[in-house]
Structures are given as structure tokens and as C-alpha cells.
Amino acid sequence: MSKLWGGRFTKETNKLVEEFTASIAFDQLLALEDIEGSLAHVQMLGETGILPQEDVVTIKQGLLRIKDKVQQGEVEFLVEDEDIHMNIERLLIEEVGAVGGKLHTGRSRNDQVATDMHLYLRNRTLEFIDLVKAVQEAIVKQAKEHVETILPGYTHLQRAQPVSFAHHLLAYFWMFERDKERLQDSLKRINVLPLGAGALAGTTFPIQRERVAELLGFDHIYPNSMDAVSDRDFIVEFLGIASTLMMHISRLSEELVVWSSQEFQFVELDDSFCTGSSIMPQKKNPDVPELLRAKTGRVYGNLFGLLTVLKGLPLAYNKDMQEDKEGMFDTVATLDGSLRLLAPMIETMTVNTDKMKSAVQQDYSNATDIADYLAKKGVPFRDAHEVIGKIVLYAIQHKKYLLDLSMEEYQEFHAEFQEDIFSVLDPTNVVAARESAGGTGFVQVKEQLGKAIELLK
Image 1: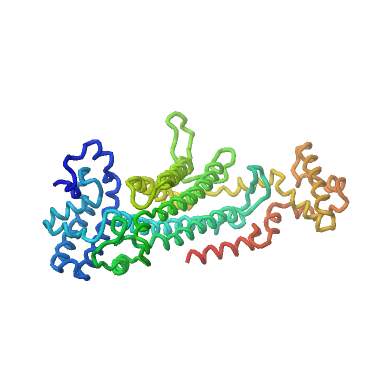
Image 2 (image 1 turned 90 degrees about the vertical axis):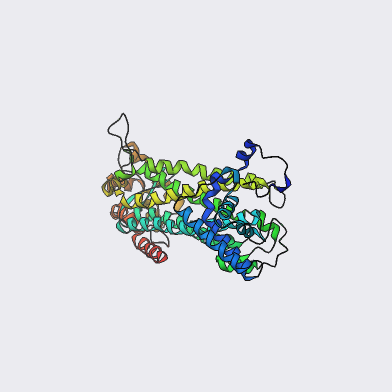
């Protein structure tokens, strides 16, 4: 069949041009959304009397048969037809005859492709909200078991203060909660209908855009036809949210890689999420979190790629905008795989509580509590800070930890030290004492956990 737009041309398209400009290799992923939009469009054409009802019925039946074939994998998409829209139209004409050519009445591929992507991202965004929630549920499940499990907390990758492991995990819960909120909020801008904008200026047919929006479940229509066909903000926003989400996944993955190392041994990842070495039989490699870190880069790249495509485009539609899809599809696939792996990996990991406990007993992360101890006895905090610095230096020089020092040694540094200093320095008491709102104290962590569980409901 000749090109659907071929009437203006006297020569066949150069084969290299055909291959270079065709998008069907990737936009076939929009097939179901394209059919969904077409079903709503043709119904509106019938309701407004633009098309006779018998044509509407015929076209609808043809589209539904094509939908079944697509879902069964029985459709061959052709490069010669350029994109998903013209492929579906060709299939429809083959299915129902020349009446299939009436489907395109009152619309353009420009508003059609924009509608397809709005539908596609709406579906994917709703799925991602559920997938993020599954990761949060896995975090909460581990946190419930480890409110009173203590490990070193770090700043600058140096041991800082002991914290509850549940508290550490829940920090990621709240990161993912913000990601989920961003996804939910983005639906306001995704759920706007471009269809009916035509190529850029609207149409002379008496269409009812609001009716199509109602049929497709959109909240609003674009009020400006030129904006409708040229807007890709909603994709940029999705890619930005995905980049932030992947950044959080990468940070958590880094923790898992470090914690599962021989040097830390704080956690052990389940065998089903690790691989071995072809030469070193003892190895158990955390390949999944390592790849999650790396795949963050491609998501960032997709965001910057689209921003670069859009930055110099005049209104309205330009062929450049064909480059909006591959990065979006790649990000969707990357994010989907990442979230589906992350949740069960967290849920099945083994927490080595003894290793964590041992770590906090062999460092100086309880030093701040000595300063607080003296400050509560009236010693200015800055003076107390200097005293503790000298105590830590003394302990390091004598190869001791703070709980190893004697009462006599403490009193050499300040007369306010009493026997209760040893209770203050116990790692469990150090963590339990931090009962300020949002702190790592066990009571606070339990309250925080309750808030997290409530949100998941």
C-alpha cells in the first residue's frame, strides 16, 4: 500500500530515509494505547454525527480484532508504515476495507502520538506507585524485626554514632515515600488530553474533546492546541522523578554492597540475588545492587537527552520529538526491573546482628554522649567537646575503647565523671537515649514505624 500521506509526492521515499525516520521499531510499544485512543475517538465521531453509526461499528469491531491480534503477538509491524499510528491504520483498512480510512477524521498523528504517550505514562506511573509501595513494605518488614538492632551510623564514611538498624532502613522508606508522592502528583499533568488539537491548530470538524477525555478517563483537555501537540513536559517530569527514584535506589544499593562485604558482614544477601566468580570459587558477588547503581546513569542520560532535544524547538510539532520515546521506554524498563528486584532482595536478606553489635563496641561512636554527659552537669559544651577529644586521643594511643577506660582514667580528665558514665556509654543506652522527635531512640523508632505502616494502608 502506498504511503497514507503520499499524494503530495512524486518519488518513493529513499530506503535509508525510510529506515532512519521510522519509529515503529520502538513505538510499537504504544500499540494498545493507540487502539484505546482510536476507540474513544471513533465513538465520539459517531456521537457527533461526523461519521455514520454503521461506519463506527465497523471500525470499532476492526480495532478490537487488531487489539486481540496484538495481544496474541500475531501482528507484523512494517517499517514502510513508519510508526505505530500508520501501522494500525493499515491493519484496520486490511481488516475492514476503505471505511477504515475514516478513522483519522478530525485528528492528526501529532495529537494522536501525544495522546498515546499520556495514556502509556499514566498506566506505567500507576504501576510504579505500586512497585515503590512494595519496596517500602519490604523495608518495613525488616525494620519491624530490628528496632533494637544497633549498628554504627556514619558520616563521611567514618563511624559517627550508633543507631537503630530499623531507623537506618526507615530513612529509605521516607525517601521512597517522597518518590511515591512525586509520582502521584505527576498524574495531574499526565492526565490531560491532547487529542482533538489536530496537527497544531485544531480542526474544522465539530468534535467534542471533552467527551473523548471522559471516555479515556482524562481530567482535563489542553486549552491550547499548539501546546497540546508540542508539550513533553510530562515526560521530562517522569524522567526527573525516575532519576531521583533511581538515585535513592542507588544509595541503598551502595549500602547493601558495603554491608555485605567481608570487611563489614552486616548483612548477607540471599543467594538468588548474587552470582559467583568463574575463577574464584569462594566469591559471592552482590551483582544486583551493583547493577542497580550503574543503571542509574542510563536513567539520568535519558533525562538529559530529552531536555537537549526540546531546548531549541520552536512551536509546534517537529520531527525531533520522535526522540522522546526511546529514552522514556528505556527508563520505564529500567525502573520496572529495578523495583521488582529491590523489594524481594531487601525482604530476603539476612541481618547479622552480632556483627553489628560487635562493631559498635569496638569504636568511639559513643564519644558524643560523654560530651552530653558533662554538659548536663553544667560544663559548657565546647569545653566538654575538648575534654572528650583528649580522652579519645588518649584511648587510641593506649589501644583502648571508651568503655575500657577505668574510673581513675576518666577523672584524670575531669572531676565530674562518676560511675554512671559506663552506663551512659553502653551502645544500647546511647541509642535509646536519643528520644528527640525523629531520633534513633527505640521509642521514637517504634512511633516512626507506626507512621510508616499507617501510610502503607
